[in-house]
Image (cartoon, rainbow, N blue to C red; front, side, top):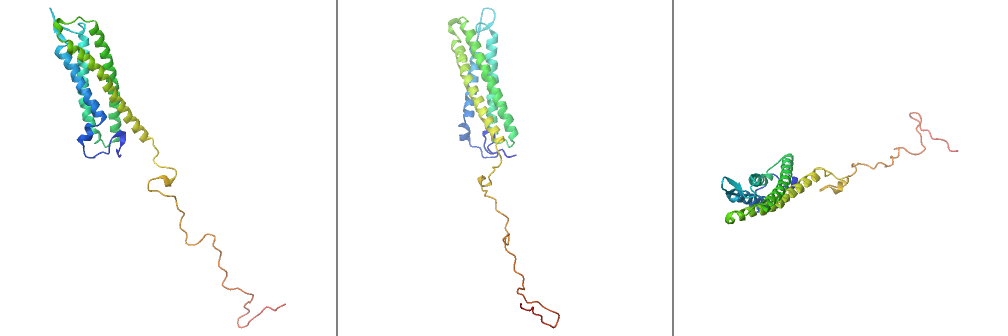
Length: 230
């Protein structure tokens, strides 16, 4: 099945253009998702924990679940962003329309779900940080706040990815249900109106007159008979 233009992609097998690739909105957003994910889990992993009197504790109000949640969604978002970037690179090479549809649906579902998880994470980390005590000498404050800020930014980057995936899916659905022909053949590209079947002679042509005309009639052989005139 030809995948030319299916779900917002070009024709399968077209040469790869790196400049055009990096200018796609989907690729730009994936790059931002990748960057923000590194910042979120990097900040929490590096200075989101502090050493207390007895054990190491999380700066988010001593809630280890908050630190683990931030690191978890950040790491998974990092891996997913790499996977979707590879998918964007291979999208033009997908010759099957069904394969493109599955990719777009997966992108739509995951991106929308991860945007929601980042929203939950932002609210969770903000609430715990607002109730936490300031760490000694302010160590780790900037990292903790940066993780919160970029969790907020990630909500919109992943939501943007979901929006573009929805546009792709809608474009593919409209193309699937579009009519394959027009009722008027003249409206088709390269088409023209139907022509009648060629006929050698006119259908309503008059019959030829008989070869013999007149009132003279042949009599018996050897004789000529002429009808008497009255």
